[in-house]
Structures are given as C-alpha cells and as structure tokens.
Length: 266
Image (tube, rainbow, N blue to C red):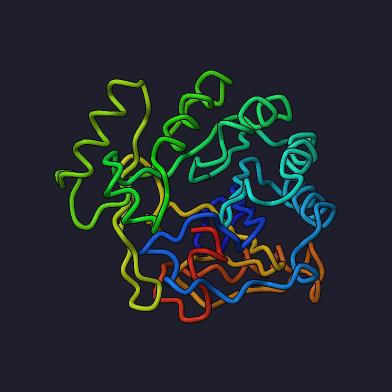
C-alpha cells in the first residue's frame, strides 16, 4: 500500500489494552484514567481478522502495544493467532517489562520475534519515582528472561528530556553496552503541543519515512500519532477503514487533542 506521498505503508501497531500496571509520569495522570469498557475493546478475533486484511494489503510488520500488553488476559493466545498469519515478517511487542519474566518463553513459542522494553533509568529510586511505584528489579529480570528466550534483538526504549547525555540516559546506555542490548533514545513528546522528534536509533518521528498505522484497543485506526484523524473499523468496515487511513494519511504530524499515549500505543 502506498499513500498520497508515495510512502509504502507496511507497518501496523496494535494497542490491545488501555490498561497498565505502571503510572509513568509522562504517560498517565497520577489519579489514573477513565478505562474503556471491556465490551468496547476489540476481541482477539477482531484483531486477528483486521490484521489478516492488512497483511493481504501489504503490511508485513506488526507490533503489539498497550497500555501494557502483558496485562491483557490471554495475550499469548493473541500472539499465536497473529503469528499464524502468512506474510508477517516481523512480529514484535513493546512492554514495560514488569511481567516479562513470566511470559518470555511462552511468547517466543507462540511466535513473537522480539521485544522493545521501556527503561528510562537504572537507579531503583528514580525508577520508582518515574513510574510511581514500579520496581526496577522486575524489569531487569524481564530483560534477562527475554534474552534467554531468544526474543532478540532485545531493544531498550529510553525516554530523554533533551539529550542522550543526560545522567539517566548515560547509565542506561552503559547497562545496554554491558548486556548486549540495543538502545533507542526517544525525546519526551507532547501530543497536544505537537512536540515530537526523530527517534535516535530508530525510524519513529521521521514523517518523511513514516510507514505505519495505529489500531487502538477500541477499534479506531489512526494514520498518524500526531493527528486527530481516526476511522472506526467496526462502523466503517475493516477494509474500507484501512484504505481510508492510507489514503488520508497526512504528510506530517501536527498535534493531537483527542488521544493519549496510553490508548494509542505510542
């Protein structure tokens, strides 16, 4: 599939839940969020059916996101359903890593190729502050489990304020070098103000090369993270929503006042 600007759209990010077991300060308000009703969240069959259509149209790369995808009940089953779709060359997941120790082996057996794990600091106190109560040891155990299970390459997503030379980022970099991990530096973004930049070590944030669509947990297909455009796949129909999202994908991001990172998937 190609959009109006001759970009090949071959990457689908699927948010499977708006729920998360952490409350990171740059992602969620301290008081929590108004959660989606269970009946509004896409079923596994709906997700798999939509993905199957997207793959037939040219998608070859799929990433499972949240919220935190590992809190979705039956997530290993869903991974197996998606991995069984012929034509997917890269099936990955973005996770905070807290539950990864318990899931790594089963995810690998179900067909997941690799994981990206969020890690903004390796200082226990700082991690607990940023995540409002998270325990970094659980994440480090999850990283180790992912490596042992063969979910490779294991990539680390490190959110920075301005530069990878910040103290927390430097220490995360050293940790990655010592543990054979790839690292991506993601400058802290603001959807409403339209603040975003290219991910260092990845392709995200570069509008010229953007090849992705995003499916939210409640079935809204978004062609751009920093835009309000969305198409309800249940109301419009899976294939029609897909083609409309590709046809109306904006040339570049602007701002987004109708969504949040926790329900779009970042």
